[in-house]
Amino acid sequence: MIEIVVGVIGVGFVLLVLAAVWVNSNVANNQAKTADAQGELKARFGEGDYHTVLPGPRCVGIAWAQEDLILGDSVEEAISVPLAAIRSADIELDGVNVTNSKTVTTSNRGSQLAGGLVGGVLLGPVGLIVGGLSGSSTSKGKSVETRKIKSVKLVIRVADRAKPLRTFVFFDIGYGEGYDATSLIVAPAIEQADHFHALLQRVIEDRER
Image (cartoon, rainbow, N blue to C red; front, side, top):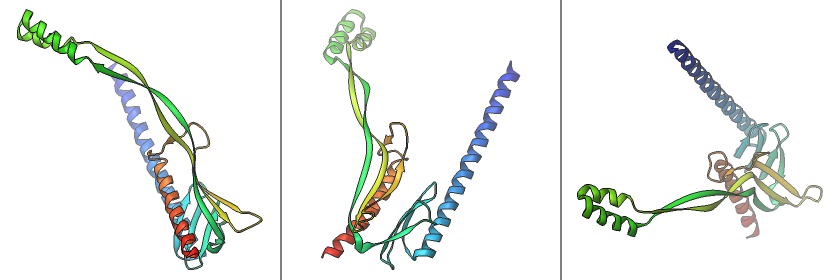
């Protein structure tokens, strides 16, 4: 029996090690792809602010020297849009409101104090403790609503009759109810969307002065 338990633990440990190696290898590969994509974007469009999202990698950026917005489902398919053609930029957060039940327990302090006094009279110090712990409590169900984010997009309106709207997707779960906005999965996407939204807003404001 002991040998079986030890064997199961050994197999589990090996599986954990293999999983850790796979995760580290996958992270390293993704970092390499991102670095390569950043280098290709700079080679094609010059220095700028660039961001890539796997798979693809899809890319968005601003080539400051050329004064262009860069967008593409891959680096090879990336196109440039003149910053002068941009009319507005908005962040679109798609999600659902999820309601969860939460139980809140409150203790009746008056009942605890009374129980402690009675216990103290009848049983002395021990009774004081027991009586104090014997107070009544009330449990109530409470509904807590949270916002689950399914996608984070930057929607850009440009002066182009053929294609007036350009959209870059920073995050899209594709299925399920989504994740909290503060989660490690969604928060970086929102941060990047805010970053490029702020840059484009500055471009528009500078042009309108």
